[in-house]
Length: 477
Image 1 (tube, rainbow, N blue to C red):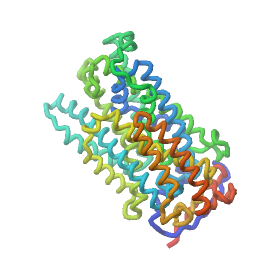
Image 2: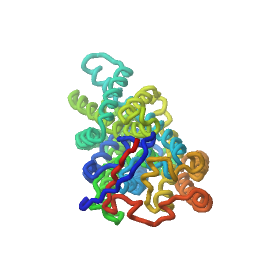
Image 3: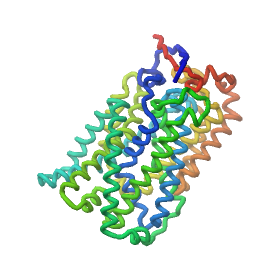
Image 4: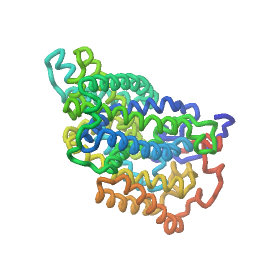
């Protein structure tokens, strides 16, 4: 970004601000569209995605499955790009921004639910990796202890994530290419063992509604879709452009390509392996598919790398930020990661796996309303303008004793409808929360609780990067 102006904001020292959540500087924006594609390929190359693909076998045709995966993840990529503008424009993360629509204390509700979802996912992915490690150890040493590997691998992931975004970016850039090569080879071996015609025409015995499958795919990234500002605040910005598509060039290209492409490729492995081998568990499928002991070890090692690349980016990074935000200054980002990871190791992932197609839309019902409220607040209510000072000090986002009734009511209404129509939770909950929040804010809350960035149309004061402005936070004692 050229010719930067610095907007100095004086904020009193409080629990609302610390060094880990202040707006990112231009020098910290290190992620290009290539990094974002690798990030998504690394996050999509995981056992959960393989299992997702396998779960559609016998419920949808091969091409219906791929189309549902593609449409669901294109939709998710669009939501991710829209919400990601928060981080690109203002350099702030999800826990900081969510104070604007929910209020200082109301923000704890979506943050805690997001943390719980991430912690559960962390347990699931770590369990898959532990089973892969166990197969390798058992092959060489005839020793089996999945709980031990579960604990050790969990600790390794916690340490890497606590190191921050540079370590995460480095792991993703190594993991994604290796995972792509493995998956294409596994697909080749599987098709060679069977026939492409048999795979394509595998019979449907228990029909799953197509749009339900699309909803499940939308729900898969419902966790990341709301906290994408945690990553986008580190994405490069094209010369602070005022034009959305120019400003979000790296974000749009990286996410619209990376998320759908990664999901289609890696879910295909789950679909094909389940049809050919009969195994829904992808670790078992890889173990029985690869022809030699050497290739089995390589394959399972890359599986372990897949869980590492996913967990550190999608399932530990966000809870670390959230715990840091809620319990600052006692808990910084690193401590937040350690706490979140520790709780993740206390989950029972082997139980969640058995209810996979129910678990995903339930997560969607709980988190998609947050995405709807964020979109409504950022684009329709505030027109992308934010009072950064008030995000970091108790000011206009106080509403009713720290809670915004508009967000709470819209959230509860959307959850009720989402759980009632669980198969289509995301498709129903997001628009309901978006509309309900807008109407309550417009016709009640804004008349009672004034918001300066809405009453004052100033771009210079309330916009950041697209005005070539970098925030400079001065913390006063």
